[in-house]
Image 1 (cartoon, rainbow, N blue to C red):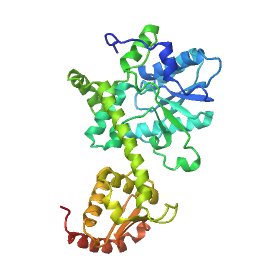
Image 2 (image 1 turned 180 degrees about the vertical axis):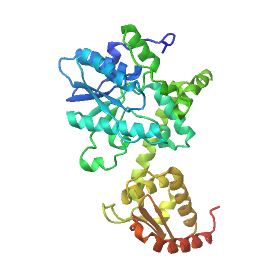
Image 3 (image 1 turned 90 degrees about the horizontal axis):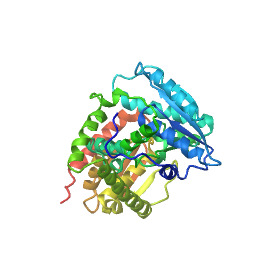
Image 4 (image 1 turned 135 degrees about the vertical axis):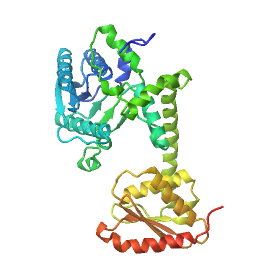
Amino acid sequence: MPVADGAAAVSPAEATTLFAGLGDAPALLLAVSGGPDSIALMWLAARWRAARKLGPELIAVTVDHGLRAESAREARAVKRQAESLGIRHRTLRWTGVKPATGLQEAARAARYRLLAAAARHVGARHVLTGHTLDDQAETVLLRMARGSGLTGLGAMTRATQLDALAGDRASPRRGNAGLLLVRPLLEVPKARLVATLAAQGVMFADDPSNRDPRFTRSRLRQVLPVLAGEGLDAGRLALLARRLRRAEASIEFTVDVAATAVSDTAWSEDGPILLDAGKFIGLPAEVALRLLGRAIAHAGEHAPIRLGRLEALYETLADAGATEPIRGRIRRTLAGALITLADQRLTIEAAPPRAKAAKRSRTLTTCIGDLRRVPKRR
């Protein structure tokens, strides 16, 4: 991988800033695949740690997905580099049958599960990855292509809870909510990391799957230079993500206020959520949509909710609530929650067991018939 013209190596002073806030941790788990980003992460972390009198122990972990013949050899190379830096190293393997579709997504979830387990084993509360500014830009484009809302377009943050990334929704209940994934290099262009390694003569692996056109992210990676030529480079896309996260925080604050204003009672762990239907319908659409999503996640299965389905449900409720008084009765299920609009009240509660689904279908058909008779909003 050639060094981009003019790319400057990361200085020791910059490295200190990159790892700010992590010096008091007992241990830091470094996810090191062997590519330039993660090798630079390990090398910079080692230099930062060596300059400190006290600080966290560094443990490097390589996840061998077993998808390429070279992966075992690359893991051994990482081990040698880690040990030369005085860093403990461990290789974890993704075993079992690999899916025929959605391979990258499954590998990503498996990687995070293995990293989370390794962090708990060594007593680390932080898992560090080598995500870069270029990765952030690719994520923004990928989520734009998928039609993500504001939350998705905010892309990656410096620190996030690891359990959700690992697809482990139960982990917060087991006391693992404090496990963080940290991306210290998120504001650093990949070219600067390559320049840093080149300046020190540090070798790294080249994963050809990063250029495999079968994968969406790889195809988007080829588009970035064209966009950069029009002024839409990685920095601009990352700036967009930062501004959207700022807007996201403002909206979420408003949803907090709205939840109190429209709730008839406090939200309990096992009881239904009761909202004043008139006040709910009167909220700005984005605020009402998010409040509805929160209520469904709270009462239901805590499963991810597709934005399109949530929007369709909200539009149904908003159309029915456009008349005064609210006419008809609507009952819908989504993500394990039962949502009922009737008698000026919106009720969100746990859906009945699936065994009762057939019995409920007749009610749903009747409700849809009622809905069709409700005039549309003007």
